[in-house]
Length: 117
Image (cartoon, rainbow, N blue to C red; front, side, top):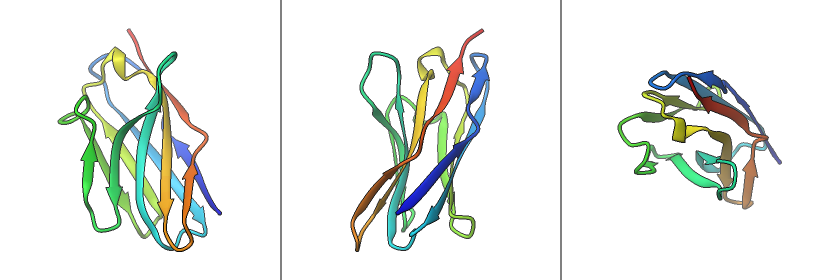
């Protein structure tokens, strides 16, 4: 099992910044990808950004140029730096870890991000 705990959500004004953190623990060997997803009220969960073990990055078009995903392998932590936040970024943000051998797909409990004046 892999446990994921997210930190860093909160209320921020439009144009502001937040940094989310996701700490992984447990059977974290062979995790090949970690990422952030979000779910706004009444909408489906969507990909925000992912990073693989060899450093490949993928971003949703809606956050390109504003959000940056990174990982600290020594701390088993993945980060999401969010700048120039917009009201449409308001959602619950979830951390995800995908593992191979044995296969596993793990989610954190989510952290609320609210962008409002």
